[in-house]
Image (cartoon, rainbow, N blue to C red; front, side, top):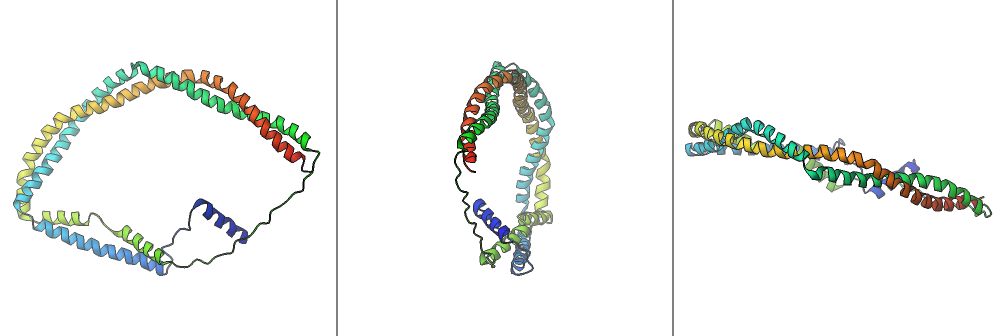
Amino acid sequence: MRHCLLLLLIAFATTGCEPELDCFDQGELEASYHEGRAAADAENAAELEKGKQVGLSLTEADGRRDGNLEGFSDGYLSGHARTYPAGYDDGYSDGGSDGANDPGACSDGESDGFSDGESDGYDDGYSGGYSDGGSAGYSDGYADGASTCPSDLRAPVSAAEEEEEKADPADVRECFSRGHTFAIDPSAFDRGLAAGKAANPDYQKGYQAAYPPAYARGYADGEAAGYGDGYDDGYGDGYDEGFAAIYEACYDESYPAGYDSGWSGGYDDGYSGGYSDGYSDGFDDGDDC
């Protein structure tokens, strides 16, 4: 048990972690959590009522203003959505062709493919050479070190004392905050405002009169802009796709040559490093009789 506790304490010390705070301990922390939720519920109710009263106080002019703004916005989005797909498709087709014909696509792919292949080949070659060199070096080092026999010293292991966890006022505040955050409703005022507007006949009169013509204006503008926006987005995506297809083909074609080029150099370097480390390890084991 003491050994497990020691490992746990060491893990906390090295990772900077602390035990998870339990706000459902059926005690003071849980009570604080529920107090936080109750406070949030009260704030939500107050904000809901405040928003409703603001909505009920609005005038016919306020309704016309909102009807114009929201009608135009809704119409624009609808018109934009109608023409955007056709523009996107046309732009994607043109962009794909231009991207595939970009002379930099293949040259970049060839360059990056060879470079990445060379790097990967070097790493793999180094690993293989290190392993082979380590085996050879260990054997030689063991033979050279077998003539000496140092003693085996072991450092004593100390055990940590178990410390009792105590409640902390900061934990109480944290659990209150968690309960409050869980229950708070940022939309309470807006929901109350919408309810007040819906129940306000003067506001609705102005809103209903302004919304339809504003929607029609927004729809026309949205249609005009939708095709162009769709074309631009489609062209960019198509260009990237066309460029990537050529890039990847040329990348794959040049990668093997780069890999082969890097492997031999990596193997030689790895063998040298592995032999040195292996010799050292072999010598240490060899002189430990």
